[in-house]
Length: 514
Image 1 (spheres, rainbow, N blue to C red):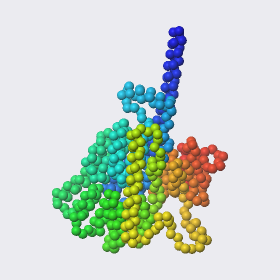
Image 2 (cartoon, one colour):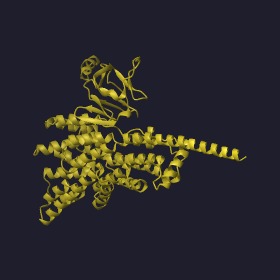
Image 3 (cartoon, helix red, strand yellow):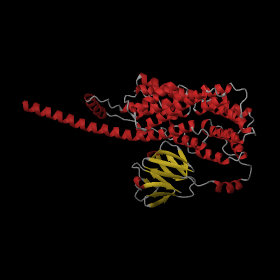
């Protein structure tokens, strides 16, 4: 009897440890896979790079339109891809393994492993960053604060990102004391990282701006000098208040006023000022800067074809056509947001708690409100365009073609279509570019002077844009093969349709070229 008891106990313990070991390995593989996909999607280091460029532009080179276009392209690729690969499907075995792991972590005074909570955190971060990108700073700030309160690991990349970008949003809202606290916390918790470096850079810009402002006030400088200093330090609300005290504004001061209104989200008011500055003949330099702002607004921030057509024509008159071409070229690389469509179309899962359901519904409501605000601003902008007697271009019209014979259209238009690469992404979006470079886990889509960085795994296929040429795969040893279309298979290797040859190994590929 005793032998049977000990044999049974041994068998049960053996089965338990075997199941526990298998379950732990399964959970660890899930954690590794999730971590890799998360880092590719979030691209934290690239986000710090773009924020640094944004800060330099904001405080040092406000009129560098090329830098601004590049930042817009880069930002569109961060936290802006489908998250289906991050969906966790935890079986009973996985949950058992997670329970065992967390029990051991608890005994070692370590925080619990929360894979499902991390998945929810990513969705929240995507939403907050989208609101930041579109200058909805109050909504972004609120969501970043909720994230800071809910993230359990105080030393995670998610916490560092949240503190840094929350600080930036607070600066843009004029709440600089609160921003200083968030940025200082990021420096204290993450010393020596790119997060701390950017937080220090932002604090130094703020302190330098405050110092200059105090010096000007103590020296009782004129309001126009004070307004320029406030503008350079990024204090746009105070800039507008100071300019209001001036009886008459020069063209340069009017430009600063318009830029301040634009940064504060008063786009239609800013556009009205820019149009007047473009039309004036006294100061050509200001007219060029104002017209570039119209090009940027019409292409990136508040799309309006009539405004773009007007500013392109004015750019030609001002001898600044190259700027218009560069901005339009950059616009073609900007990715449309995935998070908006994903959240609005998603059904509320039945397994969510009441609190989680409420948060998801709140995010949906914030997105709808943001879209309504954007529509309202679009309507105001259209009214300004009409008031300023700018010729209207229907929003569905993409190209104005003169009335000529169909045969003439065929003959003249076909040669004008340059051969490009068309890159299809896993979430259905397509990007046209001139070259695709592979650097580690990144695919860099190059078009002229601009490049769009994307996770390599997000690329599904690369083909010629109009089936008139071939795409060359270039490896370390040189050109390996040619085809009109290349497809990345489930293993990440590259093959072409109806190919009987062995796929080209993922790690060997360096670029795709025409």
